[in-house]
Length: 236
Image 1 (spheres, rainbow, N blue to C red):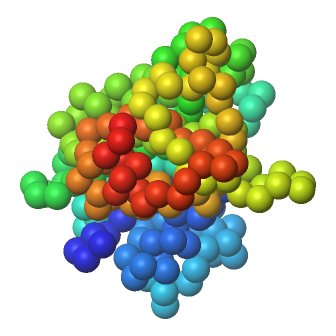
Image 2 (cartoon, rainbow, N blue to C red):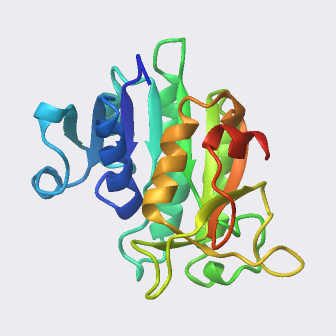
Image 3 (cartoon, rainbow, N blue to C red):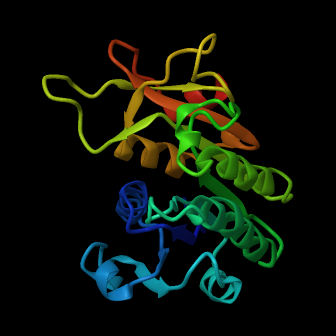
């Protein structure tokens, strides 16, 4: 993690907040891109622990470019906040990601890593989540912007997101599959995964060479053997 400074977009969301906490625990300086700095200050670790809160909006390129200054890695964990706005997925998952990519491309040459949190189902137009304003169709467009950017990237597609294991169950072990591994039949059934486990995956992707240029789908399975992310990424 030495030498990294990471911009976390969507830093007050469930996955984004867990990402910030894990980066701080590893001594990595963080810029947290948020829309409401006052709200974020009550949710995120303080500046004394290496977190700089930057107000901005992924819809507005100028604010992103300013926030990106000095960073050499991005973890994007944004998502629409208004489920009743039909333009939300397009603006956040498509145009917002394109703006983040463009800002990352403007940074000085050298190490530039982009980790995008997307979703299982992005390769299947019939996946039920698309009933919500075509959200996965727009996430797919955001993925393509990252893949075509020339940046070193990892795209992380989680299954159903949980804050804690379901009642009476222990947390399963992380399992990674390749693109379109989970979804509607004949694919494997999509499971669930803890937000903290997704954050683990994103942080590991920053430095694992075997994560480079990959789309990985992540779930947690009861009874799966524990494995380090070095091994999990290499298996995809």
